[in-house]
Image (cartoon, rainbow, N blue to C red; front, side, top):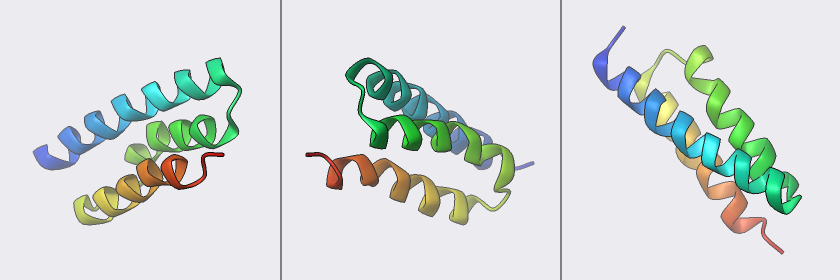
Length: 67
């Protein structure tokens, strides 16, 4: 386990929790689903570069899918 992997997991998990709470409160499905995914991906992805790329894409999805 690499220290950078742990820190990126903490960052994406925290952002995911914020998106999840926002999506639940507003009734918006895109932040809700992206928040759940951001909280879950650090458990399954063990490559730091792939984690950062996937997390960055998931953070950007609610921005581009807002109505």
